[in-house]
Image 1 (cartoon, rainbow, N blue to C red):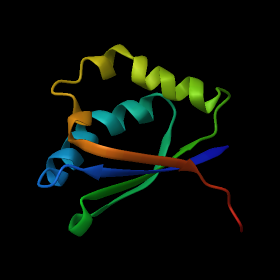
Image 2 (cartoon, one colour):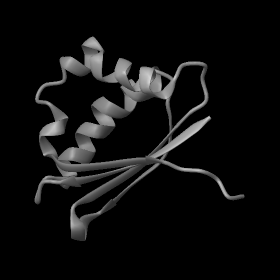
Image 3 (cartoon, rainbow, N blue to C red):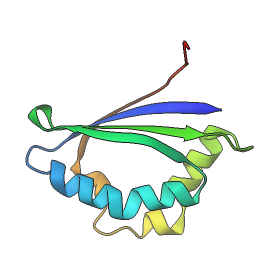
Length: 97
């Protein structure tokens, strides 16, 4: 099992647009590929979007993440939702419970 935190800094004034496109386009594709989304949050004051992905399948995380980015559906997303992202941070989390 792997759990990853992602933090995106979004262009000022576009956080609501990003969230809408994420919900309509990115989230459904991630779910279809076998990821689980444990939560998603915004910090409007700092233009931040946080989300946590989980994957428990047999595929390697990097292979499955590449499948998302290389998928026909992702390539056809127009306009590209990533245009709103200024900075991306991502890291795996380890449970301490």
